[in-house]
Length: 261
Image (cartoon, rainbow, N blue to C red; front, side):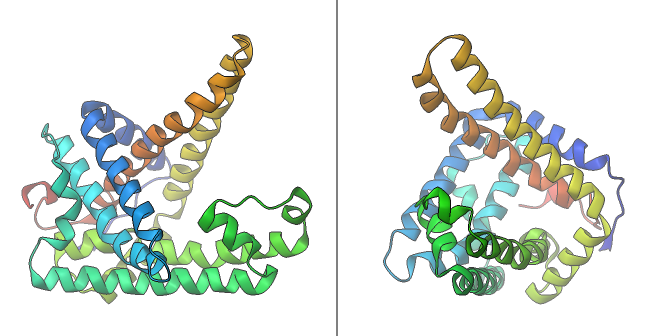
C-alpha cells in the first residue's frame, strides 16, 4: 500500500464522480443515506449513552456508504445490509471497527467538551440538539470561541479517520496504522481535499440561493420550507457518495478494491 499524490483539481473530479455515481442509483444511495441518518438520530435519542454509541457507529456506517458507492460504480444495486459491511466482515474487522469507533467517539466528546468549557455549553446544545440560541449569544465572544475551539479540534480528528475505516476494511491495516496513514494521506493531498470541501460548500450554498430565488419569483414562501431540507439531504447523499473516490485515488493498492466485498 502506497500513498498517491493528486492535483488540487482532483478535488473537483471527486465531486463530479460523486454526483454521477449517485445519479446511477439515486433511490438506493439516497435510501441508504436516509437510513444512516435515521440510525444516527435514533441512537442519539437514547439517554446518556446515545451520543457515544452514535459516534462509535459512525466510522463503520460511513464505510458502509463507501461500499455502496463501489457497488454503484459496478452497476449493482446496493442493498440495505451493505451499511453494516464493516461489522459483517469477520471478528477481526469487527473488533477493528469498534476500536476505530471508540477512538473517534472519545475524540469527538473531548472536542465537544472543550467547547463546553468555553461558553458553558451553548454551542454544544445547538450542535447536538438543534437548539438555536438567541442572536446576541451567537454573536458573543464565548459562542464564537466555542465554535472555533470545536472546529480546531475536530478537523484533525476528521482527517485522522477520513480513510481509516476503508484502510481497515479493504487493506487489512490495523486501526492505529490506518489512522496514521489516513492523516498523512489527507495532509499530502491537502489542496485536493480543500477544493473538494469548497466545491461542496459552494454547491450547498448555490442550492439554498436557488430555492430562495425560485420561491421569491413564484411568491410562494412556503415552498422554501417544503423544498429546502429534502433538497439539502439529497445533496448530502451525493457528498457521502463522493467519499469513496477520495479513498480510491489516495492510495495504490495491490488488489482492486472493487474485487473485494
